[in-house]
Image (tube, rainbow, N blue to C red; front, top):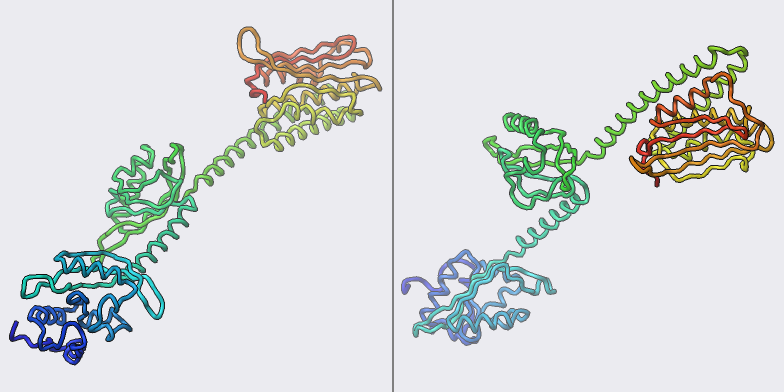
Length: 484
């Protein structure tokens, strides 16, 4: 090393060190420096890495060109200054460095955050720092050499990326979508973002197909994947998934391959959109259309039967037409009730009220009592028509044909000694003109007796008592649903 020029030639710091008045420092004139100090100085001047030498107890600073760029506006004033004074905002930190280094110890820090004066104000900075003692001719530590690599830009960029990923993750998690990555052969699903559609996957999962799809769908999905791999093109498919709670969900999944410079697949990046509600809506619409078709056919059949029975033995055509119109109107009102109730759980009280109330001149001449009970749409339709027939007969011939008669409609549920719960409905007229049993059963009576017996799966009795007509219906409650 004796042949090596001092300071080592080249660079701004080499010239500054040579021209600096070291006699004003505890190091003394440069001609009297020990060989260990000169050797270490030459080594750091030749290094492209930011290095600073802190010599003796004062920690007098000698550094290279790379470190000068780190020092910024403090350069060149830092050269020859005491480290505790040159960096006053981190004096305690450097004091510990000097004590450890001069005691022969080493220190290493990764991503060490320090608050430094930058542009006239304190600002956070992150460093990778390595400190080692420098041994002099006596074999004792005489200084500390520090390798300083600032990584502030990298840390801030990483934090910005994490924040950006966090915003993306929050956006994805706010929806029911899933962002996923797959290995080139789709053998392993990487950790995913997005929750709710499938079970959380916070680690690589080689069993994703079995975990997230139903066995009967594996072949179709795998075939679409294999085709996309073969074409090195987009995978897109709408298929079922197993939801976290075990139910069935639907997704539109689309993934694109990431290719290297040679055109080989590195990985797949994809998104799965939850379309479960759309499928439920479509299924519901299909059911509604099927139910509508069924109801239209039933209504046409019932209309045909009403027409045939009304006009078959009609002696007065105008009266028969009026009767036919009334029955068609009752059928329309019954269908209105079902539409209003969306065909699900039509209330017994609602079906009776809509069919009977228009025939009653005064509210006090109709009394209705009973618990809340739901009817099937088909049964509600038949019951509405039957109640219309009973109300029409009461208005023309029965309790409502004079000024005093009353109609009581009562229903109840009960549990027989054996069997399941049942429903009993009674229509009772009183206070009207005397009633005699008809000599011939008309269509209305047959509609009431046979229609309700068939639809309700129970028994219907028409009693022509002296005080008024009584119609009794008794049927299993399971046909309608439990009372609320």
